[in-house]
Amino acid sequence: MHPMLNIAVRAARKAGNLIAKNYETPDAVETSQKGSNDFVTNVDRDAERLIIEVIRKSYPQHTIISEECGELAGEDKDVQWVIDPLDGTTNFIKRLPHFSVSVAVRIKGRTEVAVVYDPMRNELFSAVRGQGTQLNGYRLRGSTARDLDGTILATGFPFKHKQHATPYINILGKLFSQCADFRRTGSAALDLAYVAAGRVDGFFEIGLKPWDFAAGELLVREAGGLVTDFVGAHGYLTSGNIVAGNPRVVKAMLANMRDELSEALKR
Ligand code: IPD
Ligand code: CA
Ligand code: CA
Ligand code: CA
Image 1 (cartoon, protein in one colour):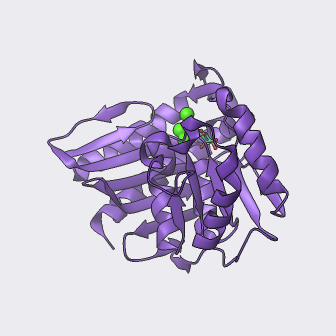
Image 2 (cartoon, rainbow, N blue to C red):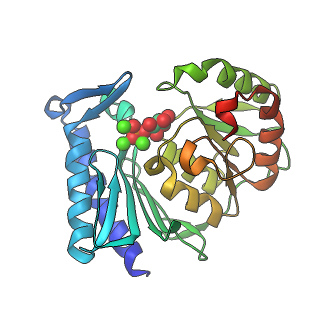
């Protein structure tokens, strides 16, 4: 196994086990608010600490970027671990058992290793660049849909970016007239993992953060899928406006989004 994948898996499993354990004891969970509709708990922070400990033990020189603690610069800036210790905090708080741990390794800006772990189902999605995507050790392939007909698309509502509500709803309406149905699961990292697994045919969301999609992006690509921004380019790396699916589904989604994009959504 790729040595960094080994560490990413160890870290994600440790954090996932801690999250699952705390899910059973809701009275011990302390929630605070970071911004409007934006929550964090002691479990997000404890899981983050565990992941960082595991990485630091093997790779003290690497840089770490994680949702709750920001950037921890290491001597080696070329290797970055991009972490979401608990993706789906709102589900966790509401006791809706769908959330994940996301760990990615980027070397000179390119993602090489990815792990998304769902501790409630014990599903571990992983990828190493050039080696395909696996779920619990079995190879995954994405959807083979040729167009939007019959597809299930995942999305996340822009609940932290309500200024985009109107174009978002318009896009949703257009896509809905052509796909079979939508899913809004509450964990973007798992949405991307599910695209990789063909459980959903496509995904789009406005304004994700690098830790939400760093691992999921590689899972999708290594399963034969495509990840772009809303105009088919790479702007999502900074904007977080992301579309994912097999190349034909992405093309069909983009064609439907084109006329509904505000200037801010074109990057
Ligand atoms: C959130 C989840 C959610 C998505 C949000 C993210 P968090 O991450 O991925 O599905 O819609 O945009 O912020 O805050 O639970 O780690
Ligand atoms: Ca969060
Ligand atoms: Ca997240
Ligand atoms: Ca998070």
